[in-house]
Image (cartoon, rainbow, N blue to C red; front, top):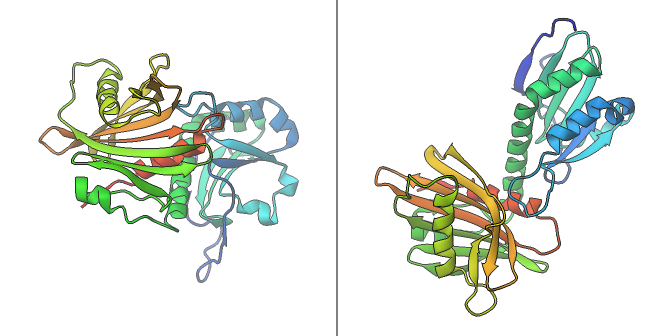
Length: 320
């Protein structure tokens, strides 16, 4: 293989010659977590297409059944014109003597991310894509979070209950209603067909640092679930489903030490279950922690978009 030249341009705001005056861009379109793939049909049906699907259809973490991270739509380069260029997330493959990967923002519409992969043949293009797949996924996810927040801001709730109880602000739509409050507990809920989306918040003392894996988070959420979140039947309550191994990782969120856990909950003594996403965030130097959790009850339907909405609300966290 000829020498590959890496050219990574992160989120370019324009391309080509400088333009006089502001560009007027159409609004982008597409469902949340949708990506349009542009490449020759033979490549889509061949190894290049397989590699793209493997990387972009990775499992969305924490769901009871497998759902892909992104929904992919294939389009022939011949059809990539007009309104087709308004897709919010585009992955475009094309031939070029120099191998490179570019990321453009708002190239044909707004908001939009276009990832352009170039190379002399499909083998080189596949290499360039695999080398940058993680970055491309992260960029698409962040673009979708911004779009989801934009949509929620069309009808935002006042969310004063979180400010009064915890001194924090969360952005969520008015479809969420306050379901339960306590001195150290807030629960909001959004009704959906045959189910509901839920978000809870509470504070806890320093968790046990000697606990292994997700046990720390599970013990905390199970204790709160038994006390605060009843099921439909007498003596039933929310608990972590032991048969499902949760995803767990440490990160820095909101400039604070944070543990994220994604898994499946079930109701003890009842027939209810669904996915959850749990953030436990260190609060300053007093070793007190803020827990934010979203969980869904939506039997017999896909749950990716519900959980994406709940995590987007959690990640909208602001402090007074």
